[in-house]
Amino acid sequence: DSQGLPRAPAVADSNQASSNATGSAAPFEDESDTTGSDAHAAVSAVETRRSSDAPTAVSGLATAGVKGANEEEEQGQSWAHLPVPVLREIMGMLSWQDVRVVRMTCKHWRKAHGVTVSCLTPTQLQAATVTELFPALAVLDLSRVVEQPAESLKQQLLEQSVVCQGLRNLKLPEGITVDDLMLAVAAAFSGLTSLSLEGTLISTDSGSISILSILQQLQALCLARTKGLSDVGVDSLSTLPALTHVSLSGCFEVTSAGCAKLGGIASLTSLNLEGCANVDDSVIAQFTNLINLQTLNLSYCSQVRVCVNISVCVCVYMYVCVRGCVCV
Image (cartoon, rainbow, N blue to C red; front, side, top):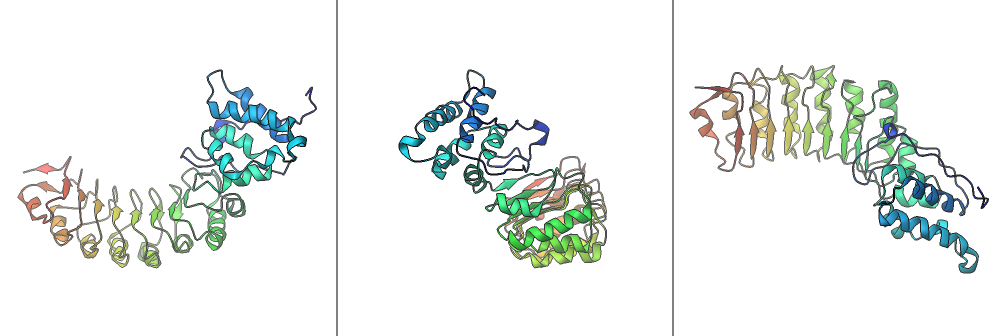
């Protein structure tokens, strides 16, 4: 470099992005602290990546970086130590690729971004890294964790639960086997309000689901397409008094009898039984006392007959979806 400035780190490949949600972060990187002058190199790298119609925020960041570096001695303040609110505003307008470059510039910039991240979708869970870099994490989506061994994932989740009690939403990877230990680890996040086990394999149905009774604040539970979930497991959901949304879509082993105890969850507002082949129209009678129930999805329940039985729904605002059912 003709100005003697250090090179900025290369931008990561898009396949390594850890999240596509607003406010989420790029993959965990090895971010050692650097000098204030590295800010100049980082913002220059961001500016180089941009086309002529790049957002004003990025251009402004690069221009300010050059000016700040030149005036650093005069002002007595490093460009690397911009106020956190200013950095947050700027980073909120950048793509994840640019944010990655900015985060790798110095610890101050990395911390300024980390405290704003509330949602993360990593490709591998590393508890210590997550806790250190993203202290305000509230949503952890592990759906992209496909290569990490189950035992390693359990261990990392356990470590995470000790120091991240602010987590509110957890989604486990599809295809993994969920045993008693895995659910006990998930239940260790005592503040969870939403949990997704969609597409997992329940290995010990009689014990596993009942472990979730610890989560007294749980409002949304997705068990869609879980294998091994039977009526026994569904019965235990009645121990979760705060539930408002339950999805059992595609759970072929669940029957109308198994859904009976769901009728005792007064807070329930939405129940999805789509594609439950062993659920018949008698299930409607189980929910006549649920005055808060607004949506009941019985689509493609082959044993449900669309007839006058639907009139037993006492809530005038209830929406009953019977697409794909038998009309009589």
